[in-house]
Length: 195
View 1 (spheres, helix red, strand yellow):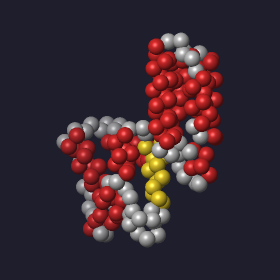
View 2 (tube, rainbow, N blue to C red):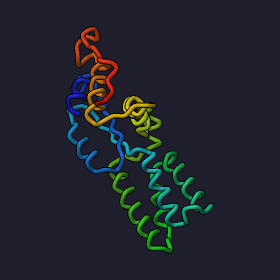
View 3 (spheres, helix red, strand yellow):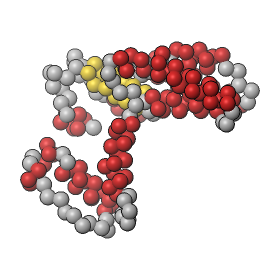
View 4 (cartoon, rainbow, N blue to C red):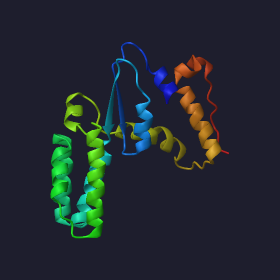
């Protein structure tokens, strides 16, 4: 990650802001904490889709997975999270009075999750949007799907791990001119069957 960041301009005097989008896993934010540089602001964003999923998990646990109340509450607070940030959601969580152990656990877990990420400044979705920043990692995940999944899981393709990794390595090498100097020197072998 550090090598890729350096090749992408990390440390360049024109670089003023670095944005990291991730789910709630602590290891992601611990890794990003190492990316510090004088004069460079680091913005951490909790992936909105992951955050919204936590809203829906609470809604289903408290109101019942298929209930209209679950749909109304989940939709409302997912939208408010994006439009107004975490404060309305945190207030709503404090007002919930679940009647089941599952609901109580979901609310408790959500409070901790959202308070942690709010305190870290990762949930200012209205501010991120106003600043022109992405709030979800979908574009990266879609890229992984098109580069990896579609290329290795196409019709009639059967791969062993070693063969798939070799083809993906070659493809990445070919599509990364800075890694091989000149595309004219990069030759891709076609017709590999993955064995």
